[in-house]
Length: 429
Ligand code: IMP
Image 1 (tube, rainbow, N blue to C red):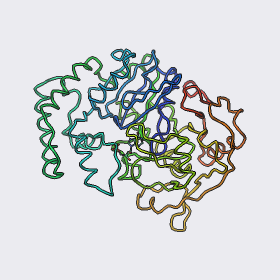
Image 2 (image 1 turned 45 degrees about the vertical axis):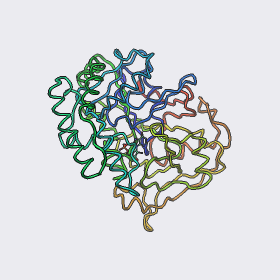
Image 3 (image 1 turned 90 degrees about the vertical axis):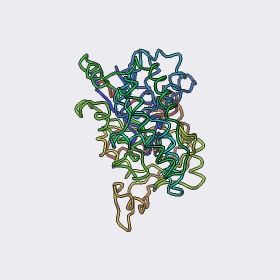
Image 4 (image 1 turned 135 degrees about the vertical axis):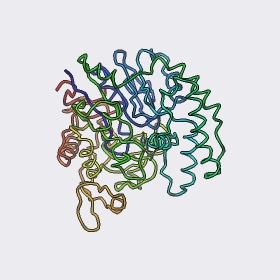
Protein backbone atom coordinates (compact mmCIF):
# COMPACT_ATOMS: atom_id res chain seq x y z
CA UNK A 1 0.00 0.00 0.00
CA UNK A 2 1.29 3.47 -0.88
CA UNK A 3 2.12 6.01 1.79
CA UNK A 4 -0.19 8.60 3.30
CA UNK A 5 1.75 11.86 3.13
CA UNK A 6 1.23 15.11 5.02
CA UNK A 7 2.47 18.22 3.24
CA UNK A 8 2.99 21.17 5.59
CA UNK A 9 4.68 24.54 5.50
CA UNK A 10 7.68 24.84 7.81
CA UNK A 11 7.98 28.65 7.84
CA UNK A 12 5.29 31.36 7.89
CA UNK A 13 3.19 30.04 5.01
CA UNK A 14 3.40 30.57 1.25
CA UNK A 15 6.19 27.98 0.90
CA UNK A 16 4.72 26.60 -2.31
CA UNK A 17 2.72 23.71 -0.85
CA UNK A 18 0.04 23.95 -3.56
CA UNK A 19 2.46 23.12 -6.36
CA UNK A 20 3.85 20.11 -4.49
CA UNK A 21 0.39 18.80 -3.60
CA UNK A 22 -0.58 19.19 -7.24
CA UNK A 23 2.57 17.29 -8.24
CA UNK A 24 2.02 14.38 -5.82
CA UNK A 25 -1.72 14.11 -6.43
CA UNK A 26 -1.57 11.72 -9.42
CA UNK A 27 0.06 9.19 -7.08
CA UNK A 28 -2.67 9.53 -4.41
CA UNK A 29 -6.27 8.36 -4.20
CA UNK A 30 -7.45 11.29 -2.08
CA UNK A 31 -6.34 14.79 -1.14
CA UNK A 32 -7.63 16.22 2.14
CA UNK A 33 -7.47 19.67 3.71
CA UNK A 34 -7.56 19.53 7.50
CA UNK A 35 -7.29 23.07 8.88
CA UNK A 36 -7.56 26.76 8.05
CA UNK A 37 -10.05 28.16 5.59
CA UNK A 38 -9.98 30.49 2.60
CA UNK A 39 -7.12 32.41 4.21
CA UNK A 40 -4.83 30.01 2.34
CA UNK A 41 -3.76 30.87 -1.17
CA UNK A 42 -2.40 28.10 -3.35
CA UNK A 43 -1.23 29.10 -6.81
CA UNK A 44 -1.01 26.33 -9.38
CA UNK A 45 0.52 26.82 -12.81
CA UNK A 46 -0.06 24.26 -15.53
CA UNK A 47 1.00 24.95 -19.13
CA UNK A 48 1.23 28.61 -18.24
CA UNK A 49 -2.36 28.74 -16.93
CA UNK A 50 -2.61 30.02 -13.37
CA UNK A 51 -5.28 28.79 -10.94
CA UNK A 52 -5.45 30.23 -7.43
CA UNK A 53 -7.26 28.12 -4.85
CA UNK A 54 -8.07 29.25 -1.34
CA UNK A 55 -10.31 26.53 0.04
CA UNK A 56 -10.63 23.62 -2.35
CA UNK A 57 -7.67 21.19 -2.13
CA UNK A 58 -4.93 21.73 -4.71
CA UNK A 59 -5.49 18.22 -6.11
CA UNK A 60 -8.74 19.28 -7.77
CA UNK A 61 -7.18 19.72 -11.22
CA UNK A 62 -6.50 15.99 -11.54
CA UNK A 63 -9.17 13.69 -12.96
CA UNK A 64 -8.74 10.59 -10.83
CA UNK A 65 -8.42 11.98 -7.33
CA UNK A 66 -11.21 12.83 -4.91
CA UNK A 67 -10.68 15.96 -2.80
CA UNK A 68 -11.92 16.24 0.76
CA UNK A 69 -12.46 19.19 3.09
CA UNK A 70 -12.07 17.81 6.61
CA UNK A 71 -13.81 18.77 9.85
CA UNK A 72 -10.86 20.93 10.93
CA UNK A 73 -11.48 23.45 8.15
CA UNK A 74 -13.61 26.56 8.74
CA UNK A 75 -15.85 26.94 5.73
CA UNK A 76 -17.09 30.09 4.05
CA UNK A 77 -19.95 29.00 1.80
CA UNK A 78 -19.62 32.20 -0.24
CA UNK A 79 -15.90 31.53 -0.84
CA UNK A 80 -16.66 27.90 -1.70
CA UNK A 81 -19.31 28.88 -4.22
CA UNK A 82 -16.97 31.39 -5.87
CA UNK A 83 -14.24 28.80 -6.21
CA UNK A 84 -16.64 26.16 -7.57
CA UNK A 85 -17.78 28.69 -10.19
CA UNK A 86 -14.18 29.40 -11.18
CA UNK A 87 -13.48 25.68 -11.60
CA UNK A 88 -16.36 25.26 -14.02
CA UNK A 89 -14.49 22.81 -16.22
CA UNK A 90 -14.07 20.42 -13.28
CA UNK A 91 -16.86 17.93 -12.45
CA UNK A 92 -16.98 19.23 -8.92
CA UNK A 93 -19.97 17.23 -7.67
CA UNK A 94 -18.04 14.01 -8.33
CA UNK A 95 -14.67 15.23 -7.14
CA UNK A 96 -15.25 17.22 -3.95
CA UNK A 97 -16.49 15.92 -0.59
CA UNK A 98 -17.03 18.22 2.39
CA UNK A 99 -17.27 17.20 6.03
CA UNK A 100 -20.66 17.87 7.62
CA UNK A 101 -18.72 18.78 10.77
CA UNK A 102 -17.05 21.86 9.23
CA UNK A 103 -17.70 25.09 11.12
CA UNK A 104 -19.24 27.82 8.96
CA UNK A 105 -17.63 31.22 8.56
CA UNK A 106 -20.42 33.82 8.48
CA UNK A 107 -20.26 37.40 7.16
CA UNK A 108 -20.46 38.52 10.79
CA UNK A 109 -17.18 36.65 11.50
CA UNK A 110 -15.56 38.70 8.76
CA UNK A 111 -17.00 41.91 10.22
CA UNK A 112 -15.65 40.93 13.66
CA UNK A 113 -12.21 40.03 12.25
CA UNK A 114 -11.93 43.45 10.60
CA UNK A 115 -13.31 45.35 13.60
CA UNK A 116 -10.84 43.61 15.94
CA UNK A 117 -7.91 44.36 13.68
CA UNK A 118 -8.92 48.02 13.42
CA UNK A 119 -9.17 48.26 17.21
CA UNK A 120 -5.73 46.70 17.67
CA UNK A 121 -4.18 49.58 15.72
CA UNK A 122 -0.40 49.23 15.64
CA UNK A 123 -0.64 45.83 17.32
CA UNK A 124 -2.79 44.44 14.50
CA UNK A 125 -2.03 40.79 13.71
CA UNK A 126 -2.34 41.50 9.99
CA UNK A 127 -4.99 38.81 9.48
CA UNK A 128 -6.33 38.02 6.05
CA UNK A 129 -9.66 39.53 7.12
CA UNK A 130 -11.51 36.35 6.18
CA UNK A 131 -13.18 35.73 9.55
CA UNK A 132 -10.93 32.76 10.35
CA UNK A 133 -10.11 33.68 13.97
CA UNK A 134 -13.68 34.55 15.04
CA UNK A 135 -15.01 31.33 13.44
CA UNK A 136 -12.52 29.18 15.38
CA UNK A 137 -13.37 31.13 18.55
CA UNK A 138 -17.03 30.20 18.13
CA UNK A 139 -16.07 26.56 17.52
CA UNK A 140 -14.13 26.39 20.77
CA UNK A 141 -16.89 28.29 22.59
CA UNK A 142 -19.33 25.61 21.35
CA UNK A 143 -21.73 28.07 19.73
CA UNK A 144 -20.61 27.68 16.07
CA UNK A 145 -22.88 26.63 13.24
CA UNK A 146 -21.71 23.47 11.56
CA UNK A 147 -22.60 22.28 8.11
CA UNK A 148 -24.77 19.53 9.59
CA UNK A 149 -27.01 22.23 11.13
CA UNK A 150 -28.06 23.16 7.59
CA UNK A 151 -30.09 19.98 7.16
CA UNK A 152 -32.98 21.37 9.21
CA UNK A 153 -33.98 24.89 8.18
CA UNK A 154 -35.75 25.64 11.48
CA UNK A 155 -32.73 24.64 13.55
CA UNK A 156 -30.48 26.59 11.20
CA UNK A 157 -32.63 29.74 11.37
CA UNK A 158 -32.70 29.71 15.14
CA UNK A 159 -28.93 29.15 15.38
CA UNK A 160 -28.13 31.86 12.84
CA UNK A 161 -30.37 34.37 14.64
CA UNK A 162 -28.77 33.55 17.98
CA UNK A 163 -25.17 33.64 16.73
CA UNK A 164 -25.47 36.69 14.48
CA UNK A 165 -27.41 38.41 17.28
CA UNK A 166 -24.45 37.80 19.58
CA UNK A 167 -22.00 39.03 16.93
CA UNK A 168 -24.12 42.12 16.34
CA UNK A 169 -24.10 42.95 20.04
CA UNK A 170 -20.27 42.90 19.96
CA UNK A 171 -20.09 44.75 16.66
CA UNK A 172 -22.43 47.54 17.69
CA UNK A 173 -21.75 47.95 21.38
CA UNK A 174 -18.07 47.06 21.67
CA UNK A 175 -16.62 47.92 18.28
CA UNK A 176 -19.11 50.65 17.27
CA UNK A 177 -19.39 48.89 13.90
CA UNK A 178 -22.50 48.27 11.77
CA UNK A 179 -24.67 45.20 12.43
CA UNK A 180 -25.00 42.31 9.97
CA UNK A 181 -28.43 41.31 8.58
CA UNK A 182 -29.12 37.89 10.08
CA UNK A 183 -31.98 37.09 7.67
CA UNK A 184 -29.65 37.68 4.70
CA UNK A 185 -27.02 35.42 6.31
CA UNK A 186 -29.61 32.67 6.77
CA UNK A 187 -30.90 32.96 3.20
CA UNK A 188 -27.41 32.80 1.72
CA UNK A 189 -26.59 29.65 3.72
CA UNK A 190 -29.83 27.98 2.59
CA UNK A 191 -29.19 28.89 -1.05
CA UNK A 192 -25.59 27.69 -1.21
CA UNK A 193 -26.23 24.62 0.93
CA UNK A 194 -28.81 23.45 -1.60
CA UNK A 195 -26.13 23.68 -4.27
CA UNK A 196 -23.46 21.76 -2.37
CA UNK A 197 -25.64 19.36 -0.37
CA UNK A 198 -24.68 16.34 -2.47
CA UNK A 199 -21.01 16.87 -1.62
CA UNK A 200 -21.54 16.94 2.15
CA UNK A 201 -20.63 13.69 3.89
CA UNK A 202 -18.84 12.02 6.79
CA UNK A 203 -15.28 12.60 5.60
CA UNK A 204 -13.77 10.42 8.33
CA UNK A 205 -15.71 7.36 7.17
CA UNK A 206 -14.97 8.16 3.54
CA UNK A 207 -11.21 8.44 4.16
CA UNK A 208 -11.22 5.27 6.26
CA UNK A 209 -12.82 3.55 3.27
CA UNK A 210 -10.12 4.91 0.94
CA UNK A 211 -7.57 3.24 3.20
CA UNK A 212 -9.54 0.03 3.51
CA UNK A 213 -9.64 -0.14 -0.30
CA UNK A 214 -5.85 0.09 -0.44
CA UNK A 215 -5.75 3.75 -1.48
CA UNK A 216 -3.56 6.46 -0.06
CA UNK A 217 -4.23 9.98 1.20
CA UNK A 218 -2.34 13.22 0.70
CA UNK A 219 -3.04 15.63 3.55
CA UNK A 220 -2.68 19.23 2.41
CA UNK A 221 -1.64 21.71 5.10
CA UNK A 222 -2.32 25.43 4.90
CA UNK A 223 -0.27 28.31 6.33
CA UNK A 224 2.99 27.31 8.05
CA UNK A 225 4.46 25.93 11.27
CA UNK A 226 5.31 29.35 12.70
CA UNK A 227 1.68 30.43 12.28
CA UNK A 228 0.45 27.49 14.43
CA UNK A 229 -1.90 28.64 17.20
CA UNK A 230 0.09 26.69 19.84
CA UNK A 231 3.62 26.56 18.44
CA UNK A 232 3.90 29.70 16.34
CA UNK A 233 4.86 33.29 17.13
CA UNK A 234 1.75 33.93 19.26
CA UNK A 235 -0.29 36.14 19.00
CA UNK A 236 0.93 36.75 15.44
CA UNK A 237 -0.43 33.41 14.28
CA UNK A 238 -3.47 31.95 12.63
CA UNK A 239 -6.19 30.26 14.72
CA UNK A 240 -5.59 26.59 13.94
CA UNK A 241 -2.87 24.00 14.41
CA UNK A 242 -0.90 24.08 11.20
CA UNK A 243 1.47 21.33 12.28
CA UNK A 244 1.27 17.81 10.87
CA UNK A 245 -0.53 16.12 13.78
CA UNK A 246 -3.63 18.09 12.95
CA UNK A 247 -3.90 16.15 9.70
CA UNK A 248 -5.32 13.41 11.92
CA UNK A 249 -7.62 15.48 14.18
CA UNK A 250 -8.71 17.69 11.29
CA UNK A 251 -10.00 14.74 9.26
CA UNK A 252 -11.02 12.41 12.08
CA UNK A 253 -8.33 9.80 11.40
CA UNK A 254 -5.83 8.71 14.04
CA UNK A 255 -2.11 9.55 14.22
CA UNK A 256 -1.17 6.18 12.76
CA UNK A 257 -2.76 7.24 9.47
CA UNK A 258 0.32 9.37 8.78
CA UNK A 259 3.25 7.61 7.09
CA UNK A 260 5.42 10.47 5.91
CA UNK A 261 5.62 14.19 6.71
CA UNK A 262 7.01 16.36 3.93
CA UNK A 263 8.00 19.82 5.11
CA UNK A 264 7.99 22.53 2.46
CA UNK A 265 10.42 25.44 2.86
CA UNK A 266 11.42 28.25 0.59
CA UNK A 267 15.16 28.62 -0.09
CA UNK A 268 14.75 31.85 1.90
CA UNK A 269 12.02 33.04 4.29
CA UNK A 270 8.91 35.19 3.91
CA UNK A 271 6.08 36.29 6.16
CA UNK A 272 2.91 38.33 5.64
CA UNK A 273 1.29 40.39 8.37
CA UNK A 274 2.81 41.47 11.66
CA UNK A 275 5.06 39.65 14.14
CA UNK A 276 8.73 38.91 14.75
CA UNK A 277 10.96 37.79 11.85
CA UNK A 278 14.66 37.62 12.87
CA UNK A 279 16.18 37.24 9.39
CA UNK A 280 14.06 39.92 7.72
CA UNK A 281 15.92 42.00 5.12
CA UNK A 282 15.31 45.73 4.74
CA UNK A 283 17.84 46.30 1.96
CA UNK A 284 18.23 45.87 -1.79
CA UNK A 285 18.65 42.11 -1.43
CA UNK A 286 15.27 41.86 0.31
CA UNK A 287 13.76 43.90 -2.51
CA UNK A 288 15.40 41.70 -5.15
CA UNK A 289 14.05 38.54 -3.51
CA UNK A 290 10.56 40.08 -3.28
CA UNK A 291 10.64 41.18 -6.92
CA UNK A 292 12.13 38.02 -8.43
CA UNK A 293 10.05 35.75 -6.20
CA UNK A 294 6.82 37.69 -6.87
CA UNK A 295 6.35 37.85 -3.12
CA UNK A 296 2.81 39.15 -2.99
CA UNK A 297 0.12 37.35 -0.95
CA UNK A 298 -2.06 35.06 -3.11
CA UNK A 299 -5.07 35.70 -0.84
CA UNK A 300 -4.77 39.37 0.00
CA UNK A 301 -2.35 40.87 -2.52
CA UNK A 302 -0.21 42.23 0.34
CA UNK A 303 3.57 42.43 -0.16
CA UNK A 304 5.41 39.70 1.74
CA UNK A 305 8.34 40.49 4.01
CA UNK A 306 11.50 38.67 2.86
CA UNK A 307 14.60 37.41 4.66
CA UNK A 308 17.34 34.77 4.73
CA UNK A 309 16.80 31.06 5.39
CA UNK A 310 16.34 30.55 9.12
CA UNK A 311 17.58 27.19 10.48
CA UNK A 312 16.39 27.75 14.11
CA UNK A 313 12.81 28.26 12.85
CA UNK A 314 13.11 25.13 10.73
CA UNK A 315 14.45 23.05 13.64
CA UNK A 316 11.35 23.87 15.69
CA UNK A 317 9.07 23.12 12.75
CA UNK A 318 10.80 19.78 12.15
CA UNK A 319 10.24 18.74 15.76
CA UNK A 320 6.67 20.08 15.92
CA UNK A 321 5.66 18.10 12.85
CA UNK A 322 8.00 15.06 12.88
CA UNK A 323 9.20 16.19 9.46
CA UNK A 324 10.70 13.20 7.62
CA UNK A 325 12.08 15.08 4.65
CA UNK A 326 12.06 18.48 3.00
CA UNK A 327 11.12 20.05 -0.27
CA UNK A 328 12.99 23.29 -0.98
CA UNK A 329 11.12 25.68 -3.27
CA UNK A 330 12.04 28.85 -5.15
CA UNK A 331 15.74 28.04 -5.32
CA UNK A 332 15.85 29.96 -8.62
CA UNK A 333 14.88 33.22 -6.86
CA UNK A 334 18.42 33.36 -5.40
CA UNK A 335 20.10 32.86 -8.80
CA UNK A 336 21.46 36.43 -9.14
CA UNK A 337 22.90 36.84 -5.64
CA UNK A 338 26.69 37.00 -5.20
CA UNK A 339 26.50 35.98 -1.55
CA UNK A 340 23.81 34.03 0.27
CA UNK A 341 23.40 33.92 4.04
CA UNK A 342 21.95 31.18 6.17
CA UNK A 343 20.91 31.88 9.74
CA UNK A 344 22.48 28.90 11.53
CA UNK A 345 21.60 29.90 15.12
CA UNK A 346 20.44 32.88 17.17
CA UNK A 347 22.26 35.06 19.64
CA UNK A 348 19.89 35.47 22.57
CA UNK A 349 21.36 38.01 24.97
CA UNK A 350 24.89 36.67 24.45
CA UNK A 351 23.92 33.01 24.43
CA UNK A 352 23.90 30.90 21.26
CA UNK A 353 20.60 29.08 20.70
CA UNK A 354 20.02 26.53 17.96
CA UNK A 355 16.23 26.44 18.09
CA UNK A 356 13.66 29.24 17.81
CA UNK A 357 12.39 29.85 21.37
CA UNK A 358 8.72 29.06 22.07
CA UNK A 359 8.40 32.20 24.23
CA UNK A 360 7.50 35.08 21.87
CA UNK A 361 9.20 37.65 24.11
CA UNK A 362 12.49 35.74 23.84
CA UNK A 363 11.94 35.14 20.15
CA UNK A 364 11.69 38.89 19.58
CA UNK A 365 15.12 39.38 21.18
CA UNK A 366 16.90 36.81 18.99
CA UNK A 367 19.59 38.09 16.66
CA UNK A 368 20.53 35.89 13.72
CA UNK A 369 23.99 34.30 13.54
CA UNK A 370 24.83 34.05 9.86
CA UNK A 371 27.03 31.82 7.77
CA UNK A 372 27.88 33.27 4.32
CA UNK A 373 27.97 31.10 1.24
CA UNK A 374 29.09 32.08 -2.22
CA UNK A 375 26.15 32.42 -4.61
CA UNK A 376 25.97 30.44 -7.86
CA UNK A 377 25.04 33.36 -10.14
CA UNK A 378 23.78 30.99 -12.80
CA UNK A 379 20.32 29.99 -13.95
CA UNK A 380 18.64 27.24 -11.95
CA UNK A 381 15.18 28.20 -13.14
CA UNK A 382 13.43 25.21 -14.71
CA UNK A 383 16.33 22.81 -13.98
CA UNK A 384 14.84 19.30 -13.59
CA UNK A 385 17.96 17.24 -12.98
CA UNK A 386 19.99 17.57 -9.78
CA UNK A 387 23.26 17.10 -11.64
CA UNK A 388 22.47 20.16 -13.77
CA UNK A 389 22.45 22.43 -10.71
CA UNK A 390 25.51 24.68 -10.26
CA UNK A 391 27.97 23.35 -7.65
CA UNK A 392 27.32 26.33 -5.32
CA UNK A 393 23.58 25.69 -5.43
CA UNK A 394 24.22 22.04 -4.50
CA UNK A 395 26.50 23.22 -1.68
CA UNK A 396 23.76 25.53 -0.41
CA UNK A 397 21.21 22.71 -0.35
CA UNK A 398 23.67 20.29 1.27
CA UNK A 399 24.42 22.84 3.99
CA UNK A 400 20.72 23.27 4.73
CA UNK A 401 20.23 19.51 4.97
CA UNK A 402 23.24 19.07 7.25
CA UNK A 403 22.23 21.96 9.53
CA UNK A 404 18.77 20.47 9.94
CA UNK A 405 19.65 16.76 9.91
CA UNK A 406 16.86 16.06 7.41
CA UNK A 407 17.19 15.04 3.78
CA UNK A 408 15.96 17.18 0.90
CA UNK A 409 13.82 14.95 -1.31
CA UNK A 410 12.32 17.52 -3.69
CA UNK A 411 13.60 20.81 -5.14
CA UNK A 412 11.36 23.19 -7.02
CA UNK A 413 12.90 25.50 -9.61
CA UNK A 414 9.86 27.40 -10.95
CA UNK A 415 6.09 27.59 -10.35
CA UNK A 416 5.49 25.13 -13.26
CA UNK A 417 4.42 21.66 -12.13
CA UNK A 418 7.20 19.93 -14.07
CA UNK A 419 10.07 22.25 -13.11
CA UNK A 420 10.91 20.04 -10.18
CA UNK A 421 13.81 17.82 -9.13
CA UNK A 422 12.55 14.68 -7.42
CA UNK A 423 15.26 12.83 -5.52
CA UNK A 424 13.03 10.25 -3.86
CA UNK A 425 9.68 8.58 -4.53
CA UNK A 426 7.86 9.49 -1.32
CA UNK A 427 4.66 7.72 -2.21
CA UNK A 428 6.08 4.24 -2.72
CA UNK A 429 9.24 4.18 -0.60
P1 IMP B 1 -5.72 34.78 9.73
O1 IMP B 1 -5.38 33.36 9.46
O2 IMP B 1 -6.47 35.45 8.61
O3 IMP B 1 -6.37 34.97 11.07
O4 IMP B 1 -4.32 35.58 9.81
C1 IMP B 1 -3.42 35.39 10.89
C2 IMP B 1 -1.98 35.45 10.40
O5 IMP B 1 -1.72 34.35 9.55
C3 IMP B 1 -1.64 36.70 9.58
O6 IMP B 1 -0.29 37.06 9.83
C4 IMP B 1 -1.79 36.23 8.16
O7 IMP B 1 -0.99 36.99 7.27
C5 IMP B 1 -1.25 34.82 8.29
N1 IMP B 1 -1.76 33.94 7.25
C6 IMP B 1 -2.97 33.36 7.16
N2 IMP B 1 -3.07 32.60 6.07
C7 IMP B 1 -1.88 32.67 5.44
C8 IMP B 1 -1.33 32.06 4.27
O8 IMP B 1 -1.97 31.26 3.57
N3 IMP B 1 -0.06 32.38 3.98
C9 IMP B 1 0.71 33.20 4.75
N4 IMP B 1 0.24 33.79 5.84
C10 IMP B 1 -1.03 33.53 6.20
